[in-house]
Image (cartoon, rainbow, N blue to C red):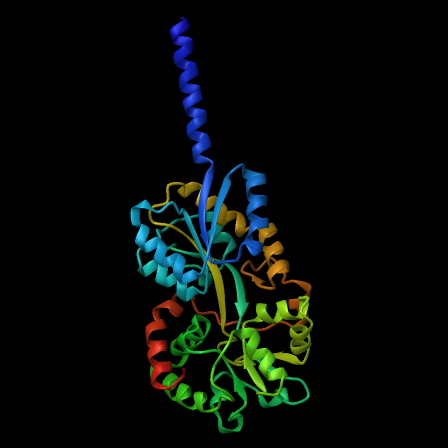
Length: 338
């Protein structure tokens, strides 16, 4: 009898130990710790699942996943840009997952068709123009920026930037390789300066009179307006947003998103974390704190973003941004986009 009780107690202790070990999830995130840690703490509070977070540069984390192979501790990979998520997919470091919650919450064009990754937040890449200098009636589409009347008036990042590569990749999908090449050849001739710096630098350059127009992601603009750096706020306040291509395919948008790693040891917990990050609560918090648009259609944007007005977004499945990436880079190289 005593041995039987001892055996049952041992089984119970073993079960508790296994559950304790299983109540965690290991996350590699290209989003900065400050931008995701509060949501992760809330996830742990609600589920009891501990999140072990490793942050780093997107490309470095992807290389780390590749080199670690089966020995990776990572269960989940979060990164910016659908192009990078596609790279992770083709690098064979992600696995497909199916979740009714995710499929219901996230529109089909913001998730991988096979379930390798799911979008968690949305940003647009519109045209910014200097107030009082540019008449918005003269603006129309991305394609229009290749016209001669915009010569020497545009600031944009380098061709090595994944956001620009995805913009060109979306254009390939819309008008084809030949027309995109023709556009790129002329567009580069309209740059006011050699591409340098990040998105904030393009907005600051325009505000300083170095150009009249800038191409940048909306969340950088939001951070500049709401931030504590006076110079950045002043520069942002000198600019307005123009939503291009409203008469046809819509303004180019992109995502940050997540995928379960191929060798995840805590797969179920990883899926639960993605589901949590796609919940109304998390989407609302992230939209407010990081000035990104929710991927969910039933969650409104923050008050600041709402002030910029509604716009028609390009509805292509963002998987094509990855598929067209290599061709986009070749087009930019041939055009002399440095």
